[in-house]
Image 1: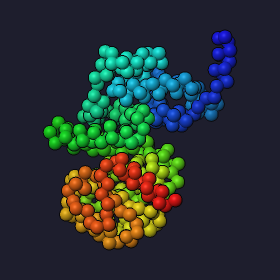
Image 2 (image 1 turned 180 degrees about the vertical axis):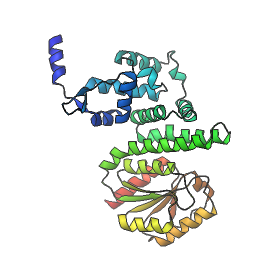
Image 3 (image 1 turned 30 degrees about the vertical axis):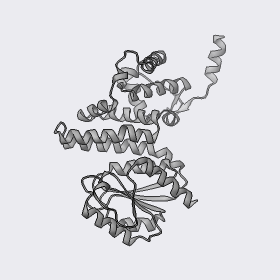
Image 4 (image 1 turned 60 degrees about the vertical axis):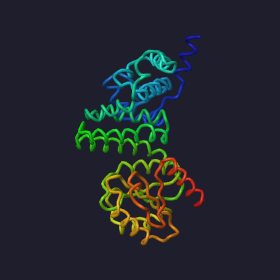
Length: 309
């Protein structure tokens, strides 16, 4: 029987590092770092040197990703065998002592931000995204962590360098999570930008992920974009709609003026929406729809795709 199992195992297809990344939500860079730092996963090699992984590697990596999403650090769980991971996760499911059941994952992420632990922060966020799915990940990790970072800065517990570090890392993670959805998107193009004076880009990346998940193709112009350039991009991309992100720091009369200018430039048949916490501080001009909640953004995008079909 063992010989049969061994033969079957030898015939099992091996997966490339890209396939493993898609199956687990862990980036190829993370897999390489873990191999070097923790001794797992150890791939087989093609004659060309390309890495190949087994199905058992993928199962164990998924368990690791789940444990990290529950608050464990990679150093604590990557080297655990699959049986040890199963035991750990079972204990947490039943509320048994183990520490992680009482662990606050957002607090753990904030600790990574405070200490500039980019590898740990990226790894845990990517594992959470893989375990939760994109919308729940945005609602239960990125949104609350962004609030925590802002509040910690207001309390002077962290500096502006921590906030910039977090924004850069989180935006990179969101781009990584978005890429497979964007590749599969077949719906119309949507222009996404922030208008003059708005330099916060994290909300823009959140909306871009939601757009791609809804099956549309986000075209992110970036931050602090003049109204005329947004309009030019709309023509160039033949976009179906335009989305504008507004943070608390810029929500006010000046942003309303920019939104009005954009609405006057773009035909009324083209939907324009504004999202973000800054929209609470402005009265949206006629023809600009405020869509603050990410789930509602997703629904709005799906409706847009249905109308364009």
